[in-house]
Amino acid sequence: MSDPCALCNSDESTSSFAVPSRGESVTLCGVCAPQVAGAELDPNHWYCLQETAWSQEPVVQVVAWRLLKRLPDDAWARDLLEQLYIEDDVLAWAREGEAAEEGPTVRDVNGVTLADGDSVTLIKDLDVKGAGFTAKRGTLVKNIRLGDDPTHVEGKVNKVAIYLKTAFLKKVS
Image 1 (cartoon, helix red, strand yellow):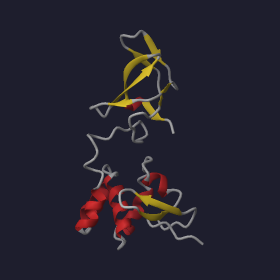
Image 2 (cartoon, rainbow, N blue to C red; image 1 turned 120 degrees about the vertical axis):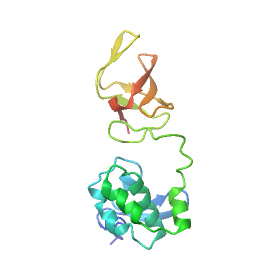
Image 3 (cartoon, rainbow, N blue to C red; image 1 turned 45 degrees about the vertical axis):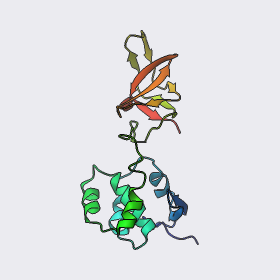
């Protein structure tokens, strides 16, 4: 029998998950692993952090802290983050990567993080001003480029470079 998930204590389909930057790993279930890796968070699932965030294992503290930082709209997550006591070296580890981020995070309509080179689909027909055509729902836009504005990305539709609002885009896996 495998170890239970270090975050929600589920023992269904658990596997080892490598925590970036230090080469350590933690056991996560099939529900927690994709969300920790960057998929859209289900805030209801993460109520379990109210217990596991207090773990004595530094790797679990790091993962819990990072998840709580990604749940800024939930008051309980903000409150828990403020209450947590984490040793300075563990907190520094949890913050690794924050400073490396250049500007705000760009997210699609589902909250999934977008990066340069990703492919997205349009979730709505969009009139392209100045180009004289409508970009249809379901159109695949490959190799997007991020700019300074987290609400827009640049991509090519019908061989025309245009800016697209992230509110009308869904990342293609």
